[in-house]
Length: 430
Image (cartoon, rainbow, N blue to C red):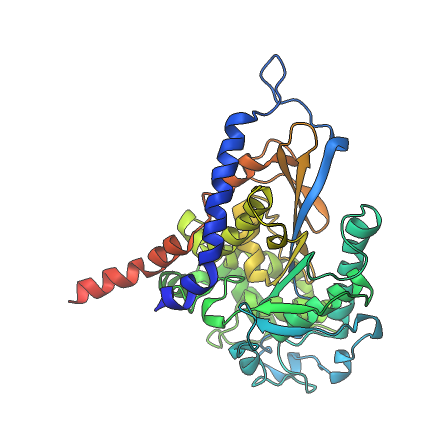
């Protein structure tokens, strides 16, 4: 069932491209060794000879309302619908389709959010005016980087240059709209289409619905996360200060989600949230990492399919057999904090701080104009990074892909890993 819903439709074409690109890259490794000095060290790369070929931007949505309110009414802030007013500069028309170009899929997440009405009248998880402005600012930064400072993209939106994909959640779709408005300043040469997928087969977030093994591992660790040494004592201290009973389901993730949403909107938080702000954020990160259980299999099941997608784009770009119209200059992916934490962990660049609203992780692909070698440059929150397995910020593509390969999952391997525990359990029950 998983294979029918997920692999055949979504990943099969990418698998072919990846195979071709990987073969080409292997040949390049054999024929083009990295320039080395007499002492065997890699020579510095002349950046003036590098040409930008492709950019992939993975970003979190803008600021939103909390996903779930605090249990006590007096500790909740007013979420007034006036916070939802759309800034005029962020308006940009777009359409949403399935990956195959069909109608927009149903969004079970939005239906769930609409069942939670916060104090003041807003729904849970709604993108706000602040969030829209954050995304517009991110779009402006991308315009400065890739339109003005470096004439890489056209100043107007061109669907032949840009591919846009988002999770099928309204705050992400709207965040993408605002980013595009800032990037292209309302100018477009063709219709703007944001592609999205069914919730059951989405790869832009850890898919607990589709991956049985991941769901079971996460469930057991979620139940014990608040009992871990340090986390347990700090949570008890914050709960007692707020007058919250121990059996009400309040954990550091809920506390941090409300605190972060209130802070970014300048709303008055509960004094205990403000007092323990640093502890709450750090413990929220600790809980997330504990639940994620950052071992190889855990990271593979959370972001392995998405890493496969990012890798496929890189391999397609370097493969000379790829038809010109099959690649884009810019790939945009609207994701979530639950995507970015394991993604940054897998890349070895997680700073142990919760990914803020509207943060981005960018992968640039360059080709050296003389040696024809390929390099990647990673940025997180606009700052250069040194990925795992790379000697420097500017990383040879083969080293980068070798490092990523530890966590990348092809469709077949993903399906196998996700169903392993389930198959074992079924056999034991026979």
